[in-house]
Amino acid sequence: MSIQSLPQSSNPYLSGNLAPVDVETTAFDLAVTGRIPTDLNGRYLRNGPNPMSDVNPDNHHWFIGDGMVHGIRLRDGKAEWYRNRWVRSESVAKALGESAPPSDWPAGHADFAANTNVIGHAGKTFACVEGGSPPVELGFELGTIRASNFAGTLPQAFSAHPKRDPHTGELHVMAYWFGWGNQVQYLIVDTKGKVRRTVDIDLPGSPMLHDIAFTKKYVLVFDLPCVFNLELAMGGERFPYRWDNSYQARIGLLPREGSASDITWCAIDPCYIFHPMNAYDAADGTVVLDAVRHNKMFASETRGPNEGAPTLDQWILNPITGAAHHHCLDDRPMEFPRVDERLMGSDYRFGYGAGVRGDFIQDVLIKHDLTFATSEVRNDGMHFGYGEPVFVPRFDNASEDDGWVMALRHNLATNLSELVIIESRAFTAEPVAIVHLPARVPNGFHGNWIPLNQ
Image 1 (spheres, rainbow, N blue to C red):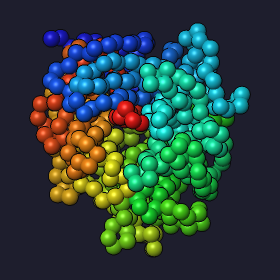
Image 2: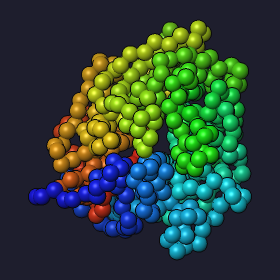
Image 3: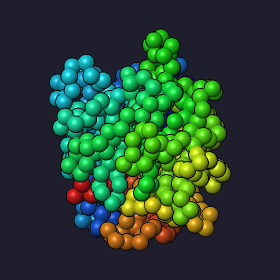
Image 4: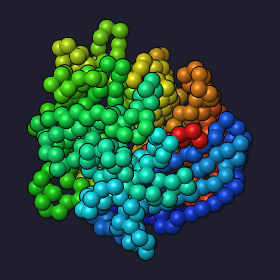
């Protein structure tokens, strides 16, 4: 079978399987190789940037493409449908010849088609993004319902990475917006979908704060040297965040029910962290953080995250002294780390990630055993490259790593994508099932398995 051609561009984030698709597709009764476990009843959803209109390849930034959500519905061992839909903002709706969707926000509020993550919470589905734009509520079949403010409880900005506490069911969120100046905001969204707690945190600058981690005792604040640049913003730059060599990299430990004045700041060597794998409280009172480390961010390459190979690293943070110790766990380039989310904030053994090559080209899947410092690499050959993996437990009380790893992979031979379901304990064996999609899913950002009851 010959390899199908892919879009090419001088901008790597508009080329190959990072290039956008230009059509919304609906398909039913998808072909499946193998057998889908009958316990998998829900939707696998994925979000990513998908610019609608022609953009200038010289300065287009990957992070500002209009959001497009892709979804696969599984039920009773069948793949019932695939859909991809642009998240409707006012501008996207106008380009599609549609009316603007309803909004809980006043006219003039940030209008952006949320392009980074998609979650289920409080019985609803939300497309999420950071930097001041609102979460967007989607219907079961991915149509846009409204730009949401969580029933009037969200003060301003949300985040691309709300993290659910497995013990309370609440979402922990670290939001930023340039309009706040040198400040970020910690939020807790309760199980009914309303913000119940906010903590404003003053900082020396205005960093791009992409994600959050927490332990049973602390919430981690990533104050890192990729910061808002006013001069670029005044010059019309749509993504005015750049590396600042003079900015002190540090991680804050905020007590779970504390105030900003209670934070212990731990200075670390300069780096950038998009995605923690997990964090937990060690028996000796320190905090362990495992995360993907980038040497810099938007220092020389300002169109996307390509400042050298990202690696899986570990920091030991002392909440009493502020000391930090750091070492590399695995130097193979990877991103999009995930864990069994029933262990979020707790000591854990297994983590999963996607290998990446230069310009975020899709590559292998990696499974880490943090207890024994070993790993397994799933390499399906030159025609296949994987995106972010998601772990789904076999049942609610299954032991860690007893379940499935689900991930989208791009098939270069057909130029189509596939949802691959892998037995986690047989990580490199033949997949349990391969769902064949009728479309290409660009290698974008984040997604989740959303069971029918979420």
